[in-house]
Length: 356
View (cartoon, rainbow, N blue to C red):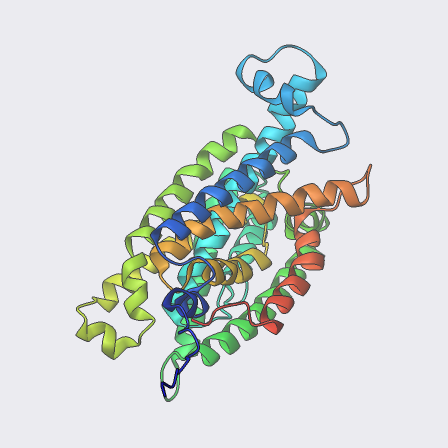
């Protein structure tokens, strides 16, 4: 008599790896996903041009950009919607990639330009420029934002490094929260002492894509490109840094060089984004988690995903703000605070956000 033994089919290695690394694993899956994300970003750009108090047909966008005529549609597309859309692209790339680099560098899932005080420092420097010398141009804000971001980053890291254990993720998060609260109070004090500064700051502080002109965006764009290049340069090293300092050194990673390049990338990206759009918090914190959930823990994939996902989130939030209270508009920072935070909590609650 022959006994037949049946066994349950073995779990597919690909499924296990997908659960461990992310929803899209393997070269074809990740690459195909990037094409889809690029298409979604293109759709968000079209909506940014088309939706508003004065609707524009998608068929009219390209002619208005390439061969403008002297009519209302072409003027709105070129002088209102184009700067607004480009601002969303630049600020989104800056905040999303800066947040991913900070999370990898500090091995802290709560790290981001807003959480670790970089945005707050940049904002305070810009407010001082407004109150002290009456500076209102985005190009002028840029250099003060860089200086404020650099000083705040050094201060928070130094404060978080005190005591036993050095700069642990928890200590850095606490130092960033304390610094943000302190510098926020100083920023409020400066604006309350100067009515003109308060008027300018109250609109800038909520986060908006409507402040910069096309010429000012041309000044900001090179810094975003340089920061992105520096971030992509250290993407492979961030994978080893995530394993811990000792193991990273044993694998040949030069930690000092890596940290300097990563810090330069964060300062350029976060400083430029803050100067052009104001202190928008949510994008730099949540988008890297979404990219990690899709592409896995490899920063060589996380950063390209952030380049596409972050501006998509920012532009769609801006479009939503134009629709919710039409004919008035909600600025993008308010919309992200209302919609983004619950979405991020939902991701954490359902465990769809991969761990570092």
